[in-house]
Length: 290
Ligand SMILES: [Zn+2]
Image (cartoon, rainbow, N blue to C red; front, side, top):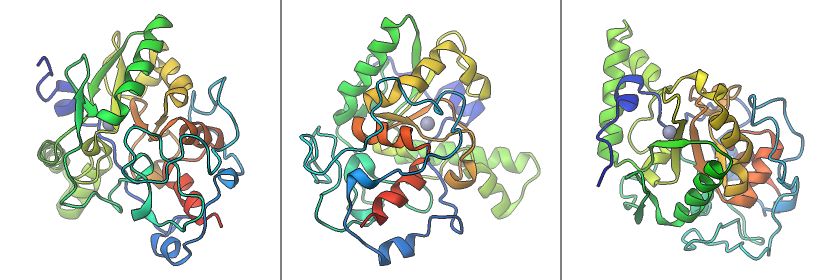
């Protein structure tokens, strides 16, 4: 296997980690959501677009349908373990976070994976990194389309074990301490860039960090590359969203990551992209539709 060992980008930049801290006190209050479990209607989600979500994500993909998936659509299974189908929610039952189908599962510090979360069934990409087998085809189609458009995306992270995530987080805490932060402040600072174990989408195998072959640094300049701009514009067509937009850090709890793509399925990706909401905000609305 030609998977790079813990890459320089992961160890040195230490920012290519996807997970968020749900910042309570904004519009997202988990207990409220649970208390107000209501029937979900896909067609009612994502009403008022907010302002820009970033230089490229602000513009929905050209072919993105502004309309959210409907209950009963052909690929709506309503099952949390629905094989390779892009599951949307059941049309008739109430939902809470724990009921979300695998492709819509919210994973962040406020909603970590359970400690007994099983290792996903993985399939190795040509790069040597692995993803949940259910997103393999979508990932390959995404990469193939990018290359066909004369871009050169490079996968620099995908699935990570809990242990690897733990090591990355601990390393980032040490960096924060070296920068003068102490105690909880060091942990909070680290978690803005690297999720603690069980709080990263990478541990579920449904996230990818993608960079331009010509510029492989994980910093904000990544968004300026032609490859990254193409990926941002077209990711929804392949079921992915840019998970940590530039103006959503206060809600996601994660710094701007113009390289971290999360799989949610095509219909949800198009709806989320068209909404201008970040995933925490969109899920909040989704669960509260009645
Ligand atoms: Zn990532």
